[in-house]
Length: 217
Image (cartoon, rainbow, N blue to C red):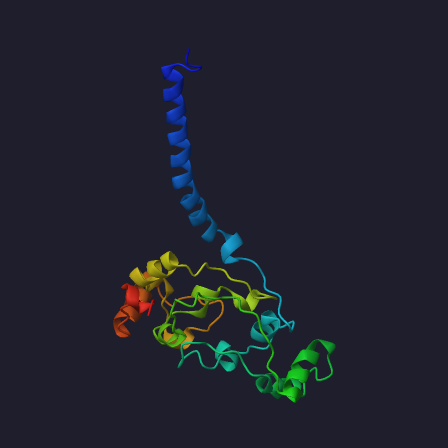
């Protein structure tokens, strides 16, 4: 019986199969790696809807409220903290007290049920991050959260992925400023940032770890 395909055809078929398998083995991980780094996965630039239309532009830029007034745990705890409704009502019992936009705040205050805010920056559970150490070592809020004072609805400006964190840990000087100015908006360094960052790093003994257990505990 005569073979339907000659030997060269068999060789070509085997080579084609090998190339397809290699493409699958290499391509699938590559696609997955590209996906987890894309804005579609990290949600960078995507404004998050919240149960209350809280506008940071008005509160920070217009009213001059410092970040630490609402996020008061940021200098002493791992989490920055979300203000309880009583803090909001400290102002809004007198200002816009009958505004329909503030009905969820009033309902939360009188019922005792907290507002279910949606996370904008949501690290995986296997990552440990401490706000206090970063703030007290002079890392400005804008370095991670971007210009929140210009956002009507807050969105992530950085991926917060491991490579991004390691880049800063290995070379933190561009992100360092005097600790008393970490919440300052429209911050302009008083001297070239390279010199300022090096001085703050030296004075505050900034030595960010890069070993695995620093963040994965």
